[in-house]
Length: 590
Image 1: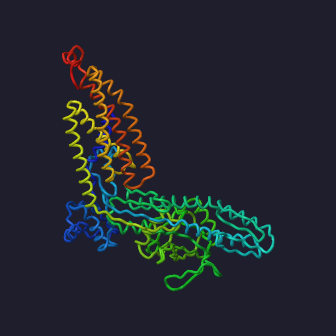
Image 2: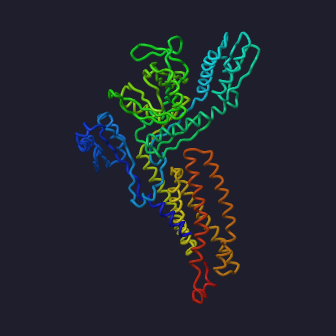
């Protein structure tokens, strides 16, 4: 018991040392570093951003502003006036003692309403993604018919989103076509009739595809958020077609929106002289591409912004095993032939429909057999190369994602929420302490001690769990936990009083009171714990934060209110053998 209390108390210690946000400014080239970074401090002071501390290490400068709420504005000013000379970002730095950091302990992560930041609600258009997949089936069907030399076949897409193959006469190779298609699209169904074959996805396959699209979108968004360096973000499903993204501490919502809301995908295509899909380049010329994708962005394992041999911005790609095999096989057959890189993204038109916009960002000749590493060259700017690399590292979205709601909470409002929430917590504690001390006297002080230990244990437990985030409703859960913890002691103390009225000694009344009250307390707390589990499993945002704090508070209340309080009570009232206090204790009133 003592070990558990000490462990949770140590875990709660880092909360006395809140994290500090600093501006990190780094020179992008040796030529830029010749301009002293420390001169930026004077320029920021002239703009009204008072710098309280500046530390320079090599080509990197760490700036701490007196008012941390100005970090976002200072960052925007640096981006506007030094877009290429310096790379600037906001970084959170721990202020706790080194020995706490060495143990891996950190303060409780604060939610959006306490730390400030941005809330996005995104809508995933899985129906559009399903239509795109049907279109891919149609294109693959054309290629398979040509490959297996099925003559006189006609393909159409009917109103029921089915690919229909019309054949004028029976052809044994048609079965090979269907076999190839089902190997590519494992959940594809087929139905043979007198005029041909219908290819479609049945309702079960469509539902599974919808779930896959939603899960892929959540995974991709989490990857992008991780690339932005946000560790306390909350990304979860909301309803059937929406995703809720909370970014606590984000002070640059424009950059977050540009990265998170991007629905970029990257595909590689071969050029085609006759037919194909027509694309218009930026210089006004046009070219035709084979609609079949050589390699898609889902096989890209890594991407870094770099420069080519001419010093122009480029993106270095690393492929996974499947992607490397596909690219090697294609490039081996097409050495000396051009290959185009197509960048696609979705946007909403004036009618609210998702529209796909694609453009060719690169056309290069395959000079040798390509493997798992190659580059996309001729990027417009270093920033464009960095953003494309970030999107490719985090993954491409296979369905259009649209931001339908955005809300920004400033750091000052978050600080006000913290102050008001903990003021309510302090007031609740003070009133509870006073009531228990006046009403139950000595046992009341035991209850107050246990209540304080309960609060420390709860804060330590929330600091220890990696997924725990404190929100404003979570503070309400803390206040409610105080009431429930006191309720546990009240039930026990009243049961002890009843035992004393029956003429039992104080020690026997203590033992009997705790034993008889134990089952009632456990039953009451378990029912509340079940409610907290249900709220946490189906809720989101503030509801999840409240449920988490309530559930953990119930566990710590049971531990401190029953076991710790019982130990303290017996320790306080148990006197040594043959002492006058023990002889007198039979007539003492608790």
